Image (cartoon, rainbow, N blue to C red; front, side, top):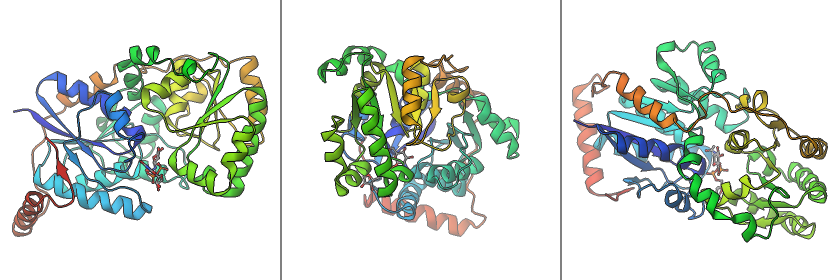
Length: 396
Ligand code: UD1
């Protein structure tokens, strides 16, 4: 019988991590991948556009959780996913990345005794002020199998006492997404569409709470970007969180007056087309640090630390602050940093994940509660809620 795999999709960066694995599992035989969208990101340009670009089917389950405080979002996903997992118990639960939905579903999986896997495990910024760092620690502590992208991630897990048997270095799944739709990216022509000269502009993204939530910190970044714009025309696809903060402080018009092009968030293919044609990226994203290393393009990361150190040691990434952005941009433009592609960043990560699942023994579908009556009640209650179609829908 086919192994039923729940893949948790939630937010923009995770759609790119889930897509190659979904395709690999669907094509491998012996697996039945089931896509669960928690609804953490819901705008069409933050979600639907990515499903279309990455040729993902409509999610089998949509939990519709949406925005809220960290506790509201995490708790909302836990309550909604628990119902799904009880009613349609998977053989494996795969969570990816480090967003709130990742930790929430890992917690549900661990408590229900599901076999759980974390894709992109072991990354550590060692900065617990980042909500994602808390999510990484929780998720890795709970998941049975840890699929890592790089040797530093393996070392972090070992230092936390994780036995080798739980770790498989599969490589970087984001590179698989790029290779999956490379022809579409190459054909998209977004720089030309925006009237930009290839190799003659910079791409900006910002969304970390530490950068955008405090107006004083945000102003420093806005001023640094205005300086940078004097060196290199900048295009800035603006995340909804950042758009609200910029608008609230009237910084959007300040940037626009200085010539920075503010545009709506772009789909995956269009965004990668823009990045691939750029001279440099200025960002606080995790994924862009990796994509620019793969493309050999300078990346200036507006953060104090990174959970992706391999992009510094082997790639094109540099950590900068508002005070050092201009200097580092000048350096990068004058002499782009040399880079080599880290080991197993080769577009074959999803295939390694499938091999690893096959290699590991088929999990037993064991209930975890020690009390059979309680367990029976939980199951029948969940089934009733599911048939009533309460907080989510099943679309296929
Ligand atoms: C989340 C992830 C972050 C990831 C980022 C990519 C966590 C803790 N953070 O942060 O790791 O890098 O996604 O974008 O999980 N909003 C919309 N439409 C949407 C989604 C969000 O308007 O489709 C607005 C909402 O007002 C929301 C705000 O953006 O309050 C922030 O969204 P949220 O999902 O809470 O966190 P991100 O900042 O996107």
